[in-house]
Amino acid sequence: RRLYRDIYELLNPTGIFLNLEHVSSPSVKVQEMFTELFLDCMSDYHESINDTRSMDEIESIYQDPEHKKLHRLEAVEVQCNWLVDIGFSNVDCYLKIFELALFGGTKNQ
Image 1 (cartoon, one colour):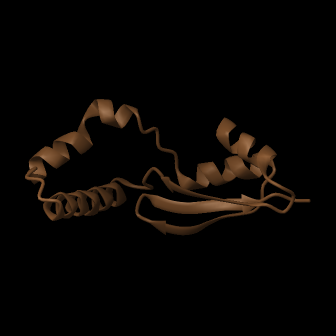
Image 2 (spheres, one colour):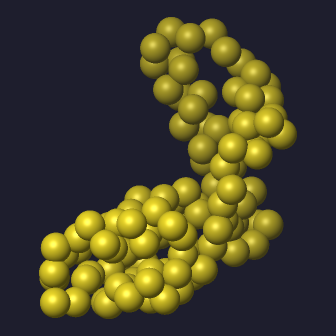
């Protein structure tokens, strides 16, 4: 939240802020769908660079509790509410695909 406040203060009047963020899933099913897609993409990426990691190795890294601790996810709705509370206008989620969201707002004059 503090980062969003700092961004708001740094924006010029009528400035636009957009944030592409990994957000929490609204349900376990959506989280499972995202995880499957993400792991498939990571596997394809590693294959494309001739990295021999198996899907099990990739999943183990992704599911590692220490890795998860570094990523405190919030729902996009919660983060949009933070922006409104800070003073942003025209706040919305402009694009959301599973756990990836593009959201933001504008600063009034």
